[in-house]
Image 1: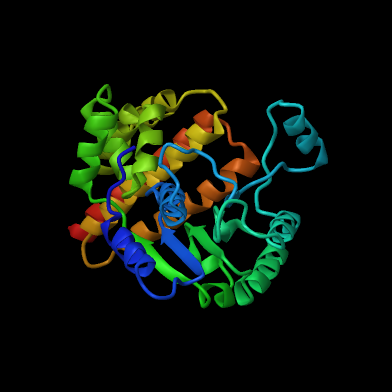
Image 2: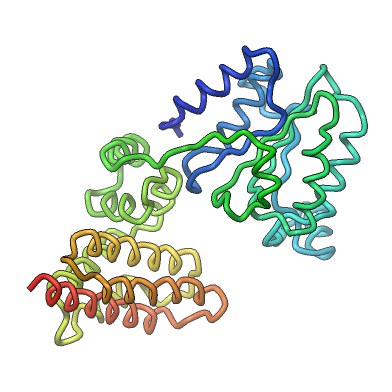
Length: 316
């Protein structure tokens, strides 16, 4: 994927490279899907003088989600599909720290990339802090974070921050036309709305084919649904399959469409904000409760219909 919105980050990084003393820890902050991890890998290769064609290098160490438990680790070791842990564990950080006791393999420097750093367990964060306070000679850290506020303040304070902005709607449309030419207008529109400036998320939404779902959601918000027919169509478009990633994407899309309505609301958007909060609650509950897709579609439609009525009252 062609990366956009990285010009300022590259300028700051290269300015630091040409300076007298390179900062030892960098925090790459921005929405998920804007290309922070790709930037980290490319910047690390540039720093070490590694060819962009070289996909791996012993002095670029990437720490990310590992197996969920010992059983899943055995599956990984056997070359089988395995389930990932929800966070980065302290044992993973300590394993990296043991490697840092030796010199870099092929030069004077090495780079440790932690992605996503904001998903480290508390004990892992505390362990990493020791390395940031007393970094091994020649070692530089790049912490990828979608929600930097979740990091320990003491970690943030030891990092220089590079911010990666969301991509504007017109540029997102250009990217999708280029990277997903098969997507129709409705699909692109749904992807752009739900992704909220994240190219990676937009491409994922395109693959989920939510164009018709988005059209029905907007009709419900704008026209209401007194006879429940649109809600029935929405449930049908969502489908009956218990596909958690797709259902999460549907909820993200509903929140994005409602957020558009809030932006257009009159002087008192409190009811709309309350409805948005209910959608946020549903989004958080879906992975755990495994709602029936049809009933979830009806619930989303009812919330959107209420939002449309509230918006009309606020503007009328």
